[in-house]
Length: 386
Image (cartoon, rainbow, N blue to C red; front, side, top):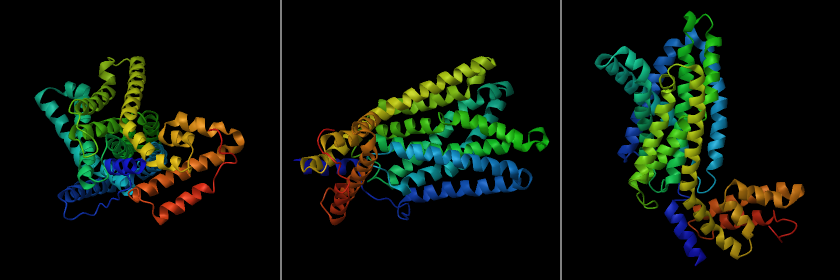
């Protein structure tokens, strides 16, 4: 019964399936290549026309946000600890967010809509409400379209709302890093470029302080909502929850981009609004995460339960693998300082074993047995207790 449940969980989540972006017979591949290719061309032309004049500001911004992006990448990858996404898939999402959604979709759509607001309404309306009424729509749809394409490029991998959550987060990360560099470059000409490093660094600091609660969070919520809306073989459609989550991401984005006009221009109120919106965004994304991750945790438990039945793992180790950070901390702390490091290594080795089992479709292959033996070599001094 446990083996059957294991194989059913692997099939439902698509855990262990590979991904290749090169799919010339899939029309979605050519859409992806065309959008990203145009974005790369546009970015090259834009940056190339300014790099000689504002090279120091550009280099500084690229360096700062490269480090920032790596830290956020590490954090986003850390939360993907159950049926992990193939590396090529998350890189494809990141590239779409950084080149396709930014340079091909958002830049042109936002600019066109702002011009329409100016012509049809007024310059004042465009300045006050243009960003809030434009960016949340086109930027979230632009990033979400990347998740949609990847759903059809990797239908055997993207199976659950949690997959959409993770892909959305990586797509938002790519968008955010490139957008932050663009903002730094745009601020360099202030004061006729006489203090380009100072002005761009000021922009860099502001973006660093506020970036962790913006595009990554919005896109993660939007991506989960998109999978709920469309449904997959492993995720039943939820036609109410899906659109609600997608709209929620846009509303959060709207509120963030409209803080100045909503506050009436009062600097203190702007800060209060930014704090409140950030806390609300964190609370919402945390709630969506816990809703979307439940099937993933159930899948981890189903995949590794036979290892508990045969004595390879203890029940406490399975609870730590299939649980959240509290369960993992409780397991590591149970052995005291002396065994904490070994317990951490055992959890990592157990996760490697789960990945190998999933890649083998639940069968007991030579690679599975080799990984299992490596886990056995990390046995705790006493297997009694947690």
